Image (cartoon, rainbow, N blue to C red; front, side, top):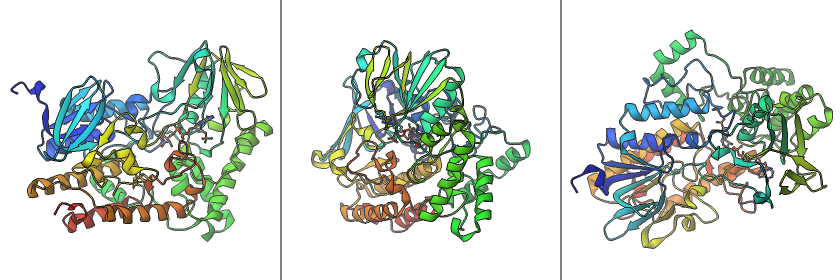
Length: 534
Ligand code: NAP
């Protein structure tokens, strides 16, 4: 067809316009010179940052590393002086990067991809969007998102509520909490940010907490001019150094364990980290072994418990905020979290002791018959991570194999990228990809996918990982994850917030530096693991 807008056949289709999709479209279009179609169900770019607009939303990874390392120039929507960027700033930053590199032009917005099918005979992918329009391409890159599917709890009475019910990840434009009687269900990273923001403006705030979580201060602050200058002047060298660490979060990763120092030294290290703020920094920048050594983990947990007791004035409330499980979820950090429970307008309800029985017209009724009156009920109840993106986006590979069936109860993809029976199909942040600061993890994955595509083009051969290679990868990922204290706690990182009976490690915990070495090893072997067709 002559009209470009009528084209239905492309070299590559990218599904999703978040941090991963934008980078994928950029590399494919600008580095590989591909004819790319981007499909995004939102009306704009940003992905997770497009959808998550709840009060208080901001990054909890430092802004200097929560961005692309390929783009030094885009800074007008990125405030280099703020340690953490707010949600809207990140959304604007991503939109600006995309515009600067002509990536926005390849996207079609407002309709979700609902199905992708591999045509064995033609060796192409056919992708259908809502409304029935379909497109074809030789390659399909799915950047459909880690947090694409919000979950609501199974509580009776949703339709009976006279007020407004919202999920944090689908915040309706215009919904404000000012002067309202607000209820928040969920105390994860999202709930923590929301609770602090809501308490400042709401008439009353009722927090429905099931499992208390360890929260350290975020330490929002301004970088001074010299720090910003150093960062920009040494941009590439800084990034090279951060990529060579486990998490690429921008802080030094210690090699010493918490039990290798005296109790006084340990306390001082924790105290400094508490004062500076940052969840990842507290968990991974204090000592090397909080996630793997029980005694070290206990020491960190005890330190935080002591802080909760000293900050929260009502001892009964403090005890309810103190976790009984190890310090082993994706670390949360929120400024003023525990202080908020000293506010007169904030009430903490322990729903393990007194569960939510039902939603009633005037609010929430608890098992003991108490009714908490509410105008707005917010669910900050999290996501079905990774797999959730494919509940409404049916992907079928060779011989019609469904992606979710292929993943089954133990979802795994080689390097988080490739699944057997799915030729020329690449997931960014698929199951068992690298656990690290996300932008550099995404860049590592996508740079590798670009090299795979180039190899496939040059050899005119589809690329598909073998079952045997995946099995080895899965075994290694499971071994590392199961040796970590994270495996003892229910969380989305193991899918166990949704799939409660079947925990599944959804990440490779070996660190970004080691992950990149695996990628380089594959390059050196000319992608041997992907040449199942030859
Ligand atoms: P989450 O960590 O899964 O937390 C969900 C919360 O909802 C938990 O407290 C959970 O309690 C509670 N919950 C779920 N079902 C419930 C029920 N039926 N009754 C009562 N409580 C219930 O989800 P999230 O807070 O949205 O965070 C997910 C991830 O998003 C984070 O770990 C992080 O990676 C990312 N995130 C990042 C930022 C940032 O600052 N960059 C901000 C927000 C989120 P249980 O623990 O008992 O299940």
